[in-house]
Amino acid sequence: MTNQMDALEVAQLQLEKAASKMNLDPNILTQLKEPERVLIVSIPVKMDNGVVKVFTGFRSQYNTARGPAKGGVRYHPDVSLDEMKALSAWMTWKCAVAGIPYGGAKGGVICNPKEMSEGELERLSRRYIYEISSIIGPKKDIPAPDVYTTPKIMGWYIDTYNKLTGEASFSTITGKPLELWGSEGRKEATARGLSYTVELAAKKLNINPLEATVVIQGYGNAGSISAKLLNEQGYKIIGVSDSKGGAYNPQGIDPSEILDYKTKTSTVKGFPKAEFISNKDLLEIECDVLVPAALEGVITEKNANNIKAKIIAEAANGPTTPGADEILYQRGVFMIPDILANAGGVTVSYFEWIQGLYGYFWDEERVNRRLKKLMVRAFNEVLKLAQREKIDNRTAAYIYAVSQVAEAMKARGIWP
Image 1 (tube, one colour):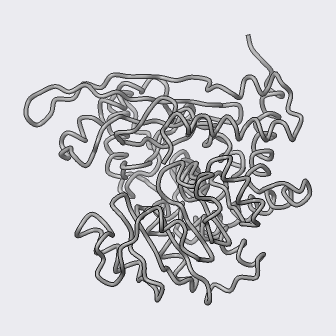
Image 2 (cartoon, rainbow, N blue to C red; image 1 turned 60 degrees about the vertical axis):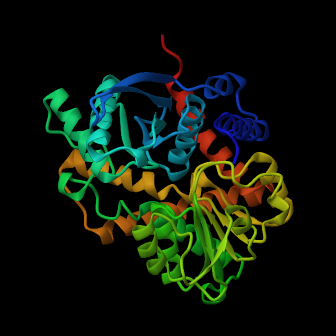
């Protein structure tokens, strides 16, 4: 896996590639290369043993030309400022591809939540939101869950924010528990949106789901639910993995069974109905659909020639490097880029935000119907542009997204 500096380099290279093919105004490009605002905060937390530990947190707001900033918060030992800048850039393009009225943001705290008690996590979470409270709000910046953050943590966030502001507002945070006016369908949204794009790609390539195989790298929320939804469409799941290793069975793996095993053991490694496989080898299994659903930078120039999938659907942000992109495109692999494939999560967060603002909440059928409509439109717009310009799908998605943001920036002008 590449380091976190590489994530920012990748994001910048992707932007520059798209800009070169669309004759983007150099003045707009200059502005789009850097985030509008970055906040770095110190987070003192009294640990269970009485010692005060100071954590470092970030919030990057990349661009708000099209609306308030939107993006998750991750808790991870490898969180860095450059990673937050890259992820907030990707969120900007993702919201534009999805056609929702948001800019992009991302937050993170350098910590290892697996080594913290629930009380320590709650104190960390509440202090983090306190520290960034001046730059968030329902019309400024709306945080949400990401890696190792959960609806429970979002509940602590909204409670803290409301206590600070004296409001009873529930639209500053999305991905909340249903009891705190979260949205039906939000937990499954990233994976469900991805399943819609896989369905469209499979039809284009004449792949029959009942005869097709899927490999998923990363078996967290997005990965495990993607496995379940794709399996329900008829796909056979033959390999899954997490940070400790993988499980492979060419005869098929039951997504629910291996999730139960992971819940009990904290890993899919050692699943008794499959053989062990490394994350490296898992990516290179012959399959119809490969879903990278872990962290960024796992498909590189070193392994791109060994990828045997016909479709890659990026549930993770930034799993493929620019060099690998070029190789995969030349080899005819159908790429569903992250800013399209995993846009379902932010789309249903948008629905949650709307529902909270109006105090009027939808059932899951309505949420899923509206999600599918937006995902199908976005997929078709990207594919149409890729075919017309004879370019790869990622570059097409970027050109589409950047053009939307650039037009908004031109319409607004610069002030003062």
